[in-house]
Image (cartoon, rainbow, N blue to C red; front, side, top):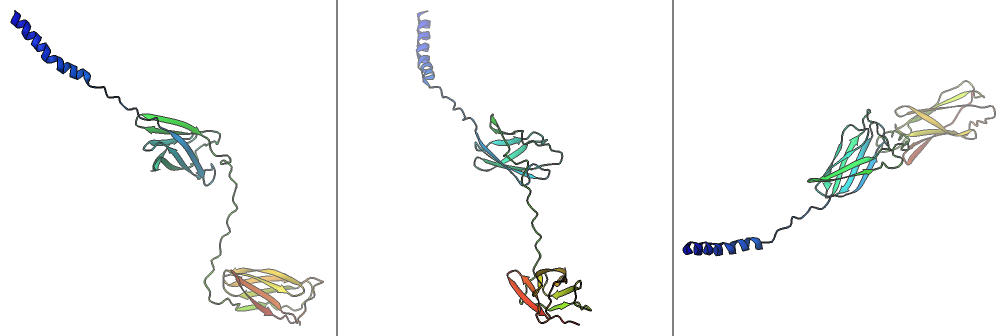
Length: 238
């Protein structure tokens, strides 16, 4: 009996250091991930909130996250991609069936692992009614020319130079320019229209008080960019 008790006591002393060592190990605390952040949202449009306009979005927030936007009146969420660290961008073209109101907020959601954050943002003031830009004038192609020259400047003959008679002029030169003519002592800067490439025409109807002097030439001017050239025509009375 005594031998059995001694054996049990010896076994207990053998186990104690191991148990003590197990209790002595410190418990490791798990680091909690920081909460995700949404810092800002910017939105621009090339034509307000009209159908066909393209909206561009930029969100700044916690890096390496999943980011998307929700706009009331749009059928799907708009997913943004991280183009720089913590910068998420994306675009959306407004469809005809969309019903977007600037009074409704844009809801942004950013998710990192199992944590997410959401925030509402407003459309910029005046985005729904952007100023209508005047259509840009269609540029007239100007072919390269080495020398600016008026090939011909003529007037259609008339029976008599008198009040009510119409003087019709024609000018030939390079296409794509602007032309005009002056009748000294009568009228200046009368525009000539390019009716065909390189052919310009203009007209003037004589008034009762006009004093057309045959000895003073009628002058046509043709301009191409910052260059100009003139031609003279001397009228003849019959």
